[in-house]
Length: 316
Image (cartoon, rainbow, N blue to C red; front, side, top):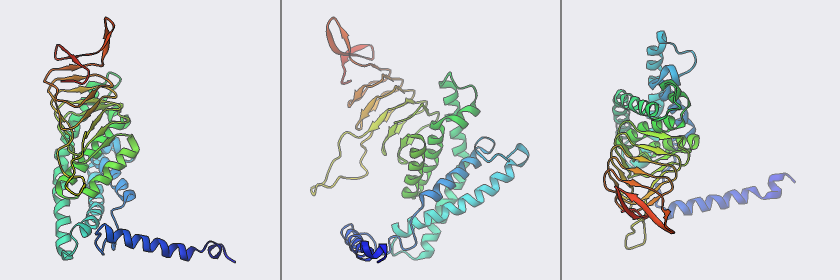
């Protein structure tokens, strides 16, 4: 008797098939779902490595790239990477546009890739401000080259800038996979829907979480373990969570948030504020405030500074 007969693998496979069909029926999945495959995490990882190299060829490209051949390398890399990215986006759209003629799906995918490609120069300029912010904000950084090559936060930010562009253009699944590729590499979890202005810096970075509807202003600095999350999840009359609602914080310009701080809900952290480590904030914070952990004063804890005043540790 073979091993497969001993384990009754055909029966197990048939049962799994029935479970899959039942699940798809309950979830109202399209019958064609996955008929041509799904966007591939492995392929998108390689595509992102290529795009990082095209954006920063001398630092993130392969070792053979030099000044004399970097333009040719960038052109060839973009041709290949964008063609492969087109294929991944097309797979997403086949499902999202179920029932639409193939030529319309192809045209939509081409439009997304065209817009994304033309956005790359502006994305490179934006990323340059992030690199500069890291170099200025970290006394341990000896050069901008060190920031690009060594800092996991820069890898996460590059992935986010590219994923966010694809998210805006109409490829949210591909964008989300790209963000999760960066998350697995760096421990930094930034949803591609989050809006982040220029000169963004994450110091160290492990454990940082930035939610889908978060808005981050210019020149903001986060440290490891910071969470910009949701506090509640509104539901409809059937109990299902309502999607696409603003539920994450707004962090205005020139804010610094130190390690382990947790900010929840659609609250605003005013411009120029400093949020101390390990605080828990669920209310708006005025501009130029300083929020610190509760500390003991004359035998009484639960006090923290807020904009020069003394408030309780829940923040104002």
